[in-house]
Length: 335
Image (cartoon, one colour):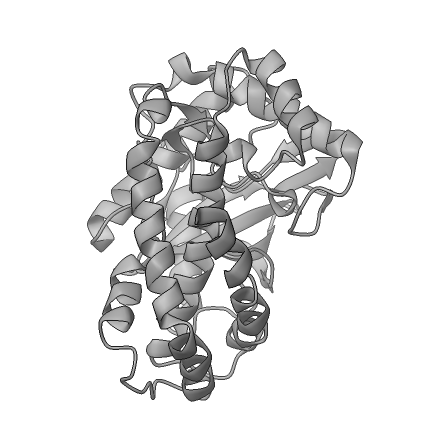
């Protein structure tokens, strides 16, 4: 996220850090990184640093339909990550620093929560496919180790149901694609692009539901998955790899993770040997389509709603046309 939330009161954030973790800030620097949460670098009076994450409870609908259920789901996810690191011994898991009550997060106000992490001095990788075969192999090994650790968290972890963010808003648009949008500076242009492809988009939604139903038997034995192990969530720190951003952790088919890591059949074979599990190509397709629909529905939600000209909305607008150019490939594949 490239812009801090305008309605978050900085004094409340600092108060939550002081009350929850006894962390008193000398500075709090906003970091325009990541795609689902807001982040700060916290300099503490004792000279140390922490990585502070603020989550918008209105922006994580895969965790629930209300702010309370999202908060509870996020707490379970972060507790799951802590258990994977502490009990299962997965040192590559970037888990939270618990607050004074042993909790992984605290409410800043009705809408936002805050979590604290160690500040990792390292580098992450660009979002997209893994370009480096060595790195890809290392991440496949991490993912296999994660999946083998399922027994440690089976009773705590959330359960993932295949779906995509903002489906309600997408279906509202598809029910009346001709209705104009006037939420902000990019609404009209985005609406023209999406309205022209509304029929194709509706076909993809139907195809997704059919594929989810058809692959249900293949997804009946879930493992603990990270959910988004793309290169942007991998860091190299002191020569070792660390997997960050665990708010999407859940029990799901292993293909949920492998979809974002494997570059071809050899990678699938490498995973199957390491994890002792068999991968279903149809489930890979399901999760890849899920990612595509998630991007499209997020664009619909962004530009139907009131919005401003910010770095985040400009990036969404610039990426929309290239995203829509992928339609023919998906329609051919699913036909």
